[in-house]
Length: 221
Image (tube, rainbow, N blue to C red; front, top):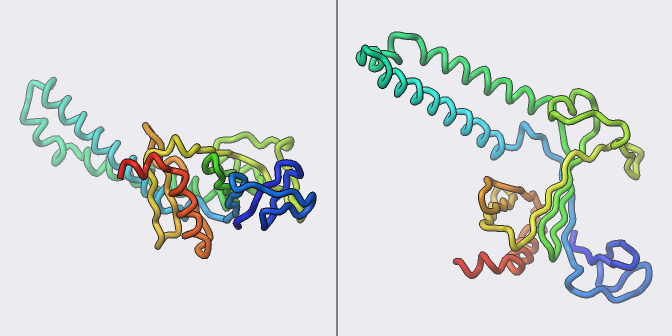
């Protein structure tokens, strides 16, 4: 939703005139805000990223064992036949499969999450809310604290579990994935830092707004 934020009333308005106090709202206070409900197990980029990291770790472990056997073992032939005769590879594959199954189980136990997005003149902001339960909190490795549970306008219980803020001058790369209706933002020395899932009918407007703010990326193209 494209809105204008009135600092005096601390409310959003659909036009540049505040609906409550009638004050004029300047262009720097315009922003986009929306929310979406997603399931961590259905987040393909995150799931593929975790499995990719697990696979690379397994390959690195096998390479480390092979080099260790090749360097320190008096019988160099044993290092060459380690993968075919020792049963190491089947054991590693079973371990890899069990780890992947455990990751999918943990993500499945996390249930749904409600993501609140705000894109304004400062940067991109995201809040993650869940319907609290002890199992969901345990699967996310966060404490179940009744003091952090609030009720929304409809009386449903919600708990804020994460806030992410990324200023425009910190963005080093931005990828607009229109078919997936997703915008990936990166910052230096990190992987994908935040992903935005805009509503399809507003995606182009949000992209244009963000391109105008991330001028440091435009210069590098």
